[in-house]
Length: 267
Ligand code: DC
Image 1: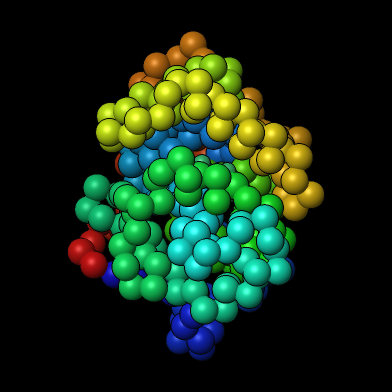
Image 2: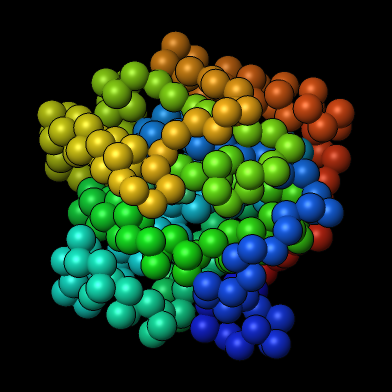
């Protein structure tokens, strides 16, 4: 089941890229925005918390990674904003959810979920994410998801730009060394040969790019709750976030049903 197809016409019920960017974000179900730097544990924590409450987990980094992959395949230097912008109209980007809530990314009909998780595509993603046209292209898609479903959405600008009225905003951090070590272990498990020093250098470079870019730089929203996961295990981090969600919305775990929003059904 395709949740979104960016190149479908608007009247088909799908989201046209770049459309509806100023739509109000009121009258929507529960929205939890989780922002923070790479490797802070956002995706594992957000995914587990979403599952406990029956919310949809939206990994917005994966969407930027998919655009990064498209730029890499087109042979475009990702810093060349005009060239990146030129490929956007030809991109069909969709995502859907497996029975376990895993988000799958589809680029022009191909499942690219695994291909976008390489260090090279991390660099492409960070660079294309600095292009304002790319951010504008993806904004409506992200907001539409939160208008229809209760979501835990993670990224860099969710609390500041995408969902400024989110009921709960969390800024997740950890020391850069901890984040690099976690990412290094993940990559090694997948057979990637990068050294810890390379992963650390990449992490520092991405932090710099993500926080200093002009378009929607990574920063905590004024009303975000800071959570530092440096000294927390994954389970402790998830418990902390779930406690915040339960308190903020006055709800119990399992109170929503992600299947109502299309997750957990077969494609
Ligand atoms: O979370 P991630 O590492 O998968 O994200 C990949 C890149 O995408 C990251 O370097 C910054 C960018 N990104 C962004 O600019 N805004 C978002 N909401 C999510 C990711």
